Image (cartoon, rainbow, N blue to C red; front, side, top):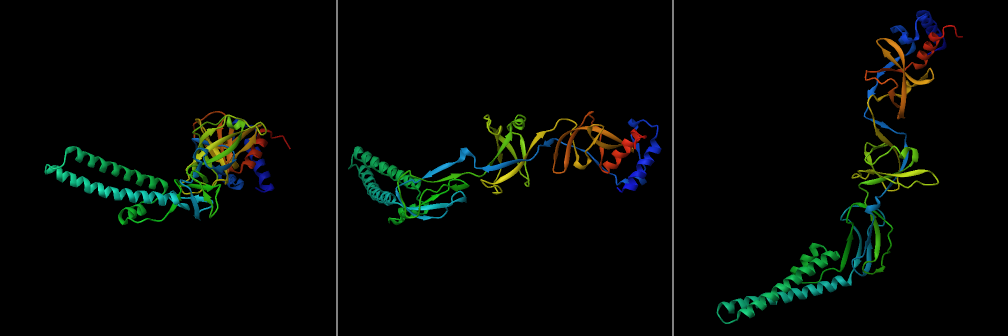
Length: 370
C-alpha cells in the first residue's frame, strides 16, 4: 500500500478508535479493506507437522547386498551387464562350463541304463506271472529301476541348480544329444549391479565371487540428523520426500552419535517399484511429526510479530484482532502453528495486508506517537 494511503488509513483508524480499548481490535469497512489490499483465508486443521528440509542419500538396504559367485569352474564367454539396474531373471553373464558337459554325459548314461532296467523289469514281471521267475528276481529288478529313476531326477536337479534352463534339459532328455555347455548367470532379484570382479575370457573357479547385487525396492534414504532433531524421532514416523509424491517411514535410528558432527544416521524406507530413486542419489526430506489438538496451517505470509510475540491477525465478526501463536514449522510457504490460547474455533486469518494492520493497531494503541 502506498505511503499516502497508509497515512490516511492510520489517521482514520486513530480518529475512529481514539479512546477505545485495544482489546476491542480494529473495525474496518469494505472501502478500507479494499484500500489496504486485505485478504483472508481459513486456517486448516492438520494431523501432521513437517520439519525443516534435511539432505538424504539413497543407498541399497545393507541387508539385501549379495555377493554372487560362479556355480562351477569355467570361462567367461559373454558379459551382458557391467553395472546399473537389472531385472529379476535378466542374464548378467555367460560361462562355458566343462562340468556341465560332464554332467550331461553322465545323465545320458543314466538314461540308457534306465531304458535297460525298464525292459528287464517288464521281462521279470512277465516271467513271474508265468511262474518261471522268482519273487526275489522280480524285486531286485524293480529296485534297480527305482534306483536309476532316483539318480536321473537328482542329476536333472543338479543341472538346473548349476544354471541349465528347462528347454535345454528337455532337449537333452528327448533328443539324447549333448546340449550347449553355456551357463547363463541371471539376477535373482530386481536390483542394482556393482563391483564386477571378472573380465571377458577370464577363467573362474567354482564359488568364485563374480559381482555384487543390491536390491533397490524398497530403497533406503540415509539422513544425518542433528542429535537435537533425532531425539524427537521414532521408528515408523512418516517422512515426506521433496519433489515426490511418495512418503517413506523411519526404519532405523542409529544409536551411535558421530563425535565430529554430533549427528545420528536415520534410515528411511521408501517403496521404489518404479525406480524413481537410484542408489547414490541425493534428495531432501521432511519428517512428519503427528500434530496434537488445535494445530493449524495457513500461508506463511500471514505470520507477523506483534507486541513482542509471534502473531496472526484474524477476523473476529468483522473485527481485526491479533492472536499470539506458537510457530511449529514453516515449510513450502505454509505456516504450521498452535494458538497460544488453545482454541478449536475457526480462524479466519489475514494473509495479505498484515503490515498495514500492524501499523494501524500500533497507532491506535499509542495515538500520541509520531
